[in-house]
Length: 80
Image (tube, rainbow, N blue to C red):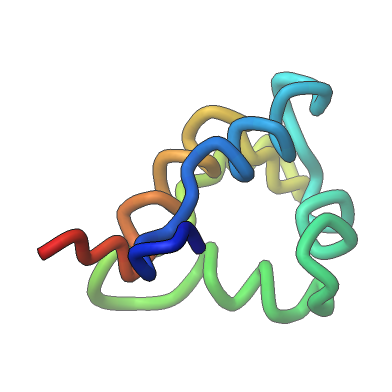
């Protein structure tokens, strides 16, 4: 958060800068300190805005840029 209480996007930019273009659920879970089950639940959840991922065979692949955009949509970035 910045001094005005809004989410600091540059921190997310820094976090994602050195990541590969694709992430496994395991990598995404490690990045945010949650379980793989949590990430898989976010991918497969019904309703509003599931985590974007592609299933190739039995393996989920998360595109880095889609993941970042999803996180930004879900942030409480209120600047008023």
